[in-house]
Image (cartoon, rainbow, N blue to C red):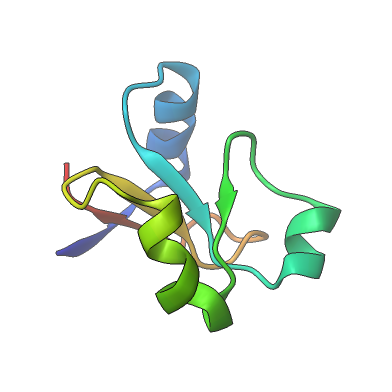
Amino acid sequence: MDTEIARDELKQKLDHPKKFALIEALPAENYQHAHLPGAINLPPDQVRTLAPQLLPQKDAEVIRVLRWRDLSFLRRRGS
């Protein structure tokens, strides 16, 4: 199930890390230009190929950044 999280909650998670995967769904060029600390790049056109390798724990919490410039569009799967 996906839910939105706020910027402040993401900041707390980054400041006090526990196990979660931070995914930026960006084209490779955008990711190379700038990305959040600790984020894994998962380009939209490569999800089926890369997700099993990059996210082997199916029950792990995943936070997916949909738009880097506006962090209000964050989605969380699992908890």
